[in-house]
Each structure stands twice: as structure tokens, then as C-alpha cells.
Image (cartoon, rainbow, N blue to C red; front, side, top):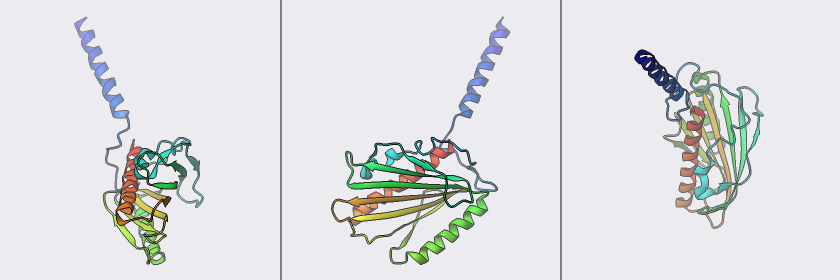
Amino acid sequence: MRRLRSSRHVLGALVLALAVAGCGDGEREVSQEGKGGYPWVATDEICNDMPYGKLADPLGARQEVADRSGRSGGGAPGFKCVQELVETGPATWGNVKVELDFAFTESVAFAKDIHAKDRENTGKDIADSGLVPVEKVGKEAFRFGYHKPAELRQVRELHVRDSNLLFDVTVTAEAHTPPTPESLKALDAAVDGFAEACLKELRK
């Protein structure tokens, strides 16, 4: 009887360990070689799983569910999301729209090549607005804007590569008063934090 109980305890511990191992862990490291660490898994809820709460300060909160569509550009599988935010609490921007575009490429090498070409071409097109390298978001990332810093309406993009995943965040927003260097810095920091949180969500 004692052996039976012991066996049951061992079995129970094994089941628990397997269950924990099977749970998603957004903090895990993904492979940065070969085919990469982001396999394409189609799901209708993926847009609504994104952590939009990271943008509440200074951009606002979700009210409606996100719109999801397939990638219009073809090529690598992925998805696009469109989410509008409403002014709540500490929000200092209005008419906010957040667009996400994810591409799950065939390999890390391919994603690196596409990201490098994207950065090169973008640098040629938006020389006046400036292209800024961004650290600590994925493996490599850069940011740029379409408007002068003093304009009320701002459209800013963050392009990220992590492993075989390419990920763009486009934020369109209107300031109530002319933006300052501090308010634009806070906006960019919120988007950076949101992008990194999205990557963690996809690693689960």
C-alpha cells in the first residue's frame, strides 16, 4: 500500500511538472537561429490577446474589440490588427488608432534580410523625419514619424524584428496641445513597452 501511495505521489508530481512546462511563459528565450522561435499559429483571438493596457498612459484604453484581418501583402503568413483607443484617465492624446502587422517568416536569416532592407528603404524615404534605432525591443528595431514634432497630429511607426518574426506598430494620434519633446518621448516609451509586451504574449 505504501508503494502504491508513493507511486501515486510520483505520478502526481510528474503530471504537475508537465502541466507547468506546458503553460506559456512569455519570459522564455526564443531561438535566434534556423527557422526561429515564432511558429505561425492561426487564431481568431490573437488581436484581442494583445496587451493594449500598456498604452493607457498616455494614449487611452480599449472600448471595442480589435479588428483582425489577414496580411494584405501576401508572402509570409501573419495577421493585422486595428484597435481604436478612447481617452480615459491619464490619456493626453485623442483619436488614437493602433495598427499592428505581424509576419512569421520562414527563417531568422530571411527576417534579418527583410528588416535590413526595410530600414534602408525607410531611411531614404523619411530622411527629414529621422530614423531612430530602438534598443531593448526584440533583437533589433527602429522608429520614425511622418510629421514634424510640433504638429498636433502624429503618425509614428515602430518596426521590430525578433527571431523570425517581423512586427510593425503604427500609432496615429492627435494631441490637445502642441507636442513637446517630453510628451513625444512618453508616447514612444509607451509604444516600446507595448511592443515588447506583445512579443511576450506571442511567446506564451
